[in-house]
Image 1: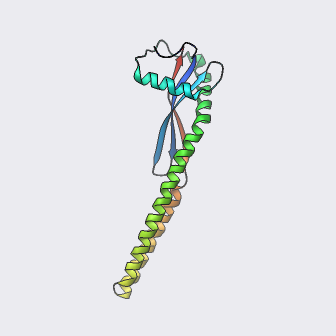
Image 2: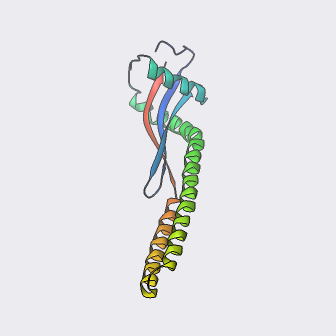
Image 3: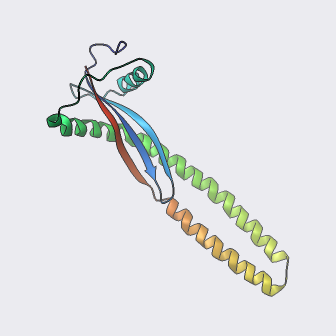
Length: 162
């Protein structure tokens, strides 16, 4: 590639960082660069990512199969280290959304309960209140499940930059 300085030599990789719940997946991509001397260079990773997106590039050769596992391990370790913060941000955004949803839905159940208490025959009112309690319990169980998250890390591509 034209814009990459000759002193940049190592492995550039693109990773998908995800946060999984029982019904949802949030994800981002993370460029990673592991220099030949072992340093993990995040600014260089972003620079190479920009260059790959704006300038023509070519693939000269594949990583030799004998080296593939070691290269993958180095890049994966760097992705874990650099991706930890990305995962924590995804998780916090998710928890903030759950808190907002909790407040909104709790208010909705309260308003519905108040309305049900003010209208109808006692038998009908009690039946509808029991239905509301069942619906609210099911919602609360689902909401608690949504608090449980799992990290997900997947390699998209690994390139040797010479």
